[in-house]
Length: 276
Image 1 (cartoon, rainbow, N blue to C red):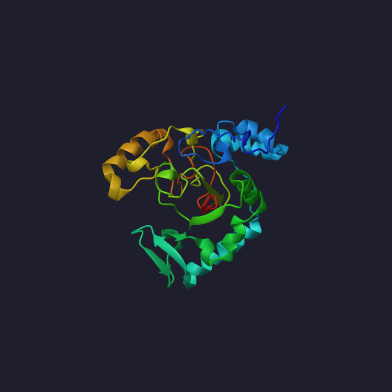
Image 2: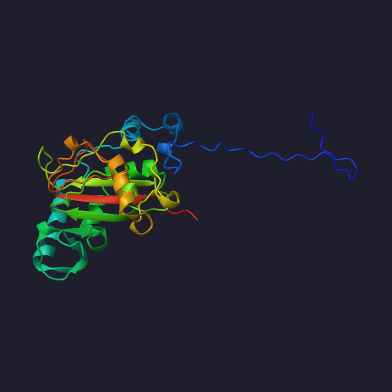
C-alpha cells in the first residue's frame, strides 16, 4: 500500500520516470535503426509487410539492395534527352566537371558529354527529381531513415572517372556519418562489361576506421596523403575485383562487388534530416 500524505511534518514523496533503453549499434558512430544490434527484433516490432521485411533484411545483412525497374523508361528517357540537349546547346543552370581537370564550372557553352559529369542535376533539372522520387526508391529510403530522406548530392555521367573501390564515408561528410545512403540509377540496360557498379556484400560492417580527431572522413589538410594511403591499403578490394570499366565506381556504406549500375549512370547521396 502506498499512502500519500499531505503533511508538513511527515511526508513520503516519490518520482518515477520511464527509463528508455539506449540501443546499441554495430559502430560507435551510430547509424540508422537497421544498424542497431537488435535490428531483427525491430523488424518484428515495426510490423513490416513481407516485401518490406525482405528488403530490409537484405539491406541490413548485405549492405545493398537492387530495385529492379524502379524508374520507368519514360522517366529515364526524359532525363537523358534533357542532358543531351544541355551539352549540345549549353545550359548555364547546370554545373559540371571535366574528367581532364575536375574544375567545377557552368555548362555555358556546348561541351563533350562523354568527357564530364554533371553535379547535383536535381537543382537544375526537374527530370532528375522525377527519377529520384520514384515510389519504389523513396518508400524504401523513408522506411530505413524513419523520415523523409534529405537529398544533398548527385552525380550523372556517361563515362565514370574509374575511381577505385572505396567507402563513401571517407569522402562524403554528413553530420552523422552512418546516417547515409547512396543510390545508383542505371540509365541503360545492365549487362556484363557495361561498366557495372561493384559492391562487396557485408563490407558495411567492417570495423570502424578512425581518422584524426576521431573522424570518420579523411581530410587532406589534417590527415595528409600518407594516412589516406594507409586507409586505402586496408579498405581496397583484392586486385581481381578491380576490373571496373569506364563508368564503374563504388558507392554506399561499403564498397566492392555485385550491385548493378550501367555506364550511363546517375548516383545520389541521401542522409537523415537534421533534428535540432
